[in-house]
Length: 253
Image (cartoon, rainbow, N blue to C red; front, side):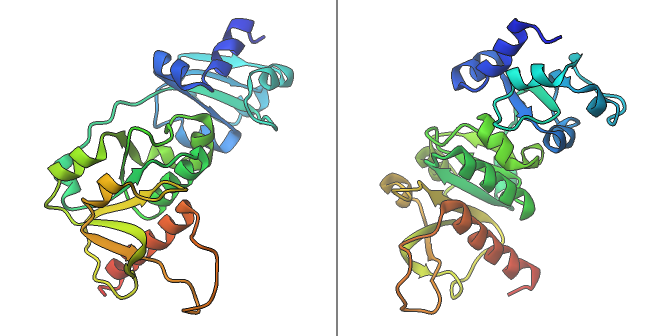
């Protein structure tokens, strides 16, 4: 049986202050937990016996077989699944030298955890290993972010740092940004390395960061000149931009 204290701790991880204090994060769901179990140190795993029987040897500090009603009490999901796991937050080291030869994402004030999680998933799909975020970007360990990554959190490293200072330090690397007044992305030269800056859902890229952008890009609607929505969702825009960069690389365009 799952203790009240354990349930209280698990549910407390919904709040950032408790995630920071414990240096832990929460993951829920059969596939998500199975996908990341080998990538992070697992403090505690609570699951139905039927799920545990399908996993073989599970490395966890504490392993608890629980009934459905106990999992429902601990879960943050509207529709709980068979397993909940508490993982240690990893302590990644940012390799700034490697960034000079890679394509990386820079997120300036992304507020929605779902958008952040989707962008992490996109980064994984397009082979982008590092995401650098402004301090006011949503927390990567928010349970909603973790859920939205669909397991990609195991393959992408996320860092938080003041962006102006960071981009100034890395000023020899091309910096691309998505703007409504930028140049048509399909007609511009794109390098194999660099930073792709994506801005806040409502306000876009901040003025201070904009000054560090060396190449302003725009995703045109189709057909040109027709009336359409003002802009794309930031995660959708990220997908379009990353796809175009990788298309150029794949076909040497």
